[in-house]
Every structure is written in C-alpha cells, then in structure tokens.
Length: 443
Image (cartoon, rainbow, N blue to C red; front, top):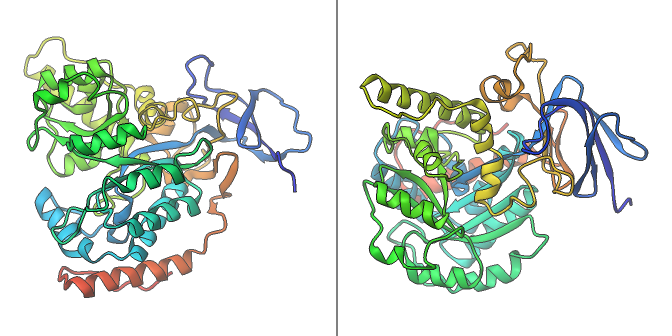
C-alpha cells in the first residue's frame, strides 16, 4: 500500500483563504499524504489520483466552532423554542438524564457524519453532558471513527441527577490519551466559570470553553488577574456583555465564537451584535451551529444568518442616528469566520484553515453547476450566499477522502438511521417525554 498517497484537485476555482496568496484563481491543489504539497497551475499529476475540479470551487474545509454534538438524536425536537430554561429542561432534565454511553456515541457520530457531509472538516464539540468517563469515551470514539477533526470539550452534565465527581480529575487521563501531536481528535474543558477546574485544564495545556450570556453571568475581578484569561479561553455567545468585559477579552486575547441562528432563536443578542463587538475590539470571531434541536449541521446557513443579522443590526443603528456605526459586513469577512477564524479558535491555525503548502489537507470541493448557483460572478459571494450542503461534492480531512461524488464514504446510512431511531425511542420511553415525535421509519 502506498504510504504517501498523492491526490490532485485539478482545474478548479481555488480559494486558498491565505492572505499571502492571490485568490480566487483557476488551478490545482496537490496533496501528498496528509499535507498540501503544492498550489498552482498545471501541477504534475504523476502517480496521483486526479479529482477533476473544473466547474467547482476548491477551498479549505469549513470549521464549526461550537456544536453540542451529543444532541444529535434530538434533531429539530424544539424548532420553535425561545426559552433557554425550557430547552434545558427537555434536553437535560428529561431526555439527557437517561443517556447511556450508546446514546452519546450515536448522537455524536450522527452529528460528525452530518458535518462532514456538509463540508465541515473540524468541529469544536461542546459537550455539557459528560456524565461519566464511559460517556466521554463513547463521544471520543464516535468522533475518531467518523474521521472528522475535533476538539471535544468535556463538561459537567446539566441535569440534577448527574454526578461530576469524575471531573476535573479525568482530564489528565484524557489529555494523555488524546492530546498527542498527530491526533485528529483532541480534548479540552467545558469549564464555565469554575476557576478550580480551569487551573487543572491549564496545567494540562487544554483549551477552556465557557458559554457566556451577559443577561445570565458576569465576570468578577478575579478574572482580570494575570494568567487567568488568555488564548486558551474560548467564550461562546458573548451577547449583551459590558464594554469593560469586551476590553478585558481584547487585552487578554481570548477567543470568541458566536452562533448566528441560535443566538437569534433564544433572543440572546441585540443590535450590539456580539460578532461585531468582537471584530471592533480586534478579535477574530468564529461561527458555530450550536444546536441540533432546532437546526442541523449546516455552516452555509450560519454564514447567511451572520451576513443578514449584522447588516440589519448596523442599519438599524444608523437609522436611529448613531455615529461611527461599523460598516456593513462583507462576504469575505463572513467566510473568514467560517474557516480561518475557526482554526484560530480551535488552536489549529498552523495546521488548517487555509490551503497553504505544508498545512494538513482539510479540503472541500463545491459544485457550481446547480441551477441555483451558476453563473459564478463572485466566487466568495457564491460560497456565502448561494451554495448549500447539497453542493458539497468532495470532503477531505488530513489527506483522506471522507466524501466523494456527493456521497459519504464507508458509511452505512441505513444502519445508522435504524440505530439512531432506536436510541431516540429508548430516550423517549425512559424519560416519559410526551411532546410529539414523528413516527418516521429508518431509511
């Protein structure tokens, strides 16, 4: 077997997202092993598997910087919810309280595979349901088996029945087993504002995730102490927080992620607009999908929502007479949030996020021949505003093809569907959950 396989994406519209490389241009991308070996025109293809990319866009894989993968079997269970605590009651107190490691595995696998299918090559998996070491093992095995690149954030379960006695002590075992140099799947801490847990994670050089909604939480003076906040921190949502907190975030160089659709769903954000606040303070906000209970694994939807929400919010501020209102967002900035910024948040900027020689080959190819897509007059505008998950033809993670010709590779969807439905039915029966659940047969 070839230990250094070569793949050539030939004749596509290449969008590198690398600030030092002119784009887009028609050309080739050569992959050797798990690395990008060359980007150029008419590259030699000797010994390479050639993927004809004419009429398609070749670009870095999308990065979903915040997603609760463990909610996979609860897809669209609460599409209209606008009450955070009603949501928590259902997903945590009712259904989540009955999760077995098997349910954790199936939900996480479903989310990971759906993400790959949609051109997402990296996911920051925000797991606020790490009920036991066995549940964490199941989630990690599901991510690794899917082939996606992931940062799995281990966190205490939200329901009252769960114990978090294994945390944060279990982090050392997980770091030793998963945070190796060449691991596609790594582990961090979903630590909220627990500084004792943060200290353990920092000692293990782990990223630390906190969901932060200004209406529900504030940062005390202890968070301004030297060494507490820094690039190891990821703050999600960041809606309606005071200027002093934004300045602290900027001074310490923390990472910020926003979820355009779910932040709107729950009414977390206002015309201050967290994404814009982060940009205005010199930070590089990334995008996350957040919830399967209302949405699905679709970063194209998040990009479109970001574009529309920012423009609406800034337009409203101008309309009411504010001065020095930020300029309307561009499609380039939106795409950067879904690629380059996501890599930065996940601590992977040196590995992925751009099509740069020497980086790992996380690449997607997007078809443009669909009736809703052609003609391609502006490449970046087409990616942000026109294509969707159905146009994703090919997905590669670390040089390995995971989707080809519009089909996931080595995945039995019929078997997965049957297993997921059985998991859902078990959780509904065990919890006594009474909201309508559609009696849909497995595919």
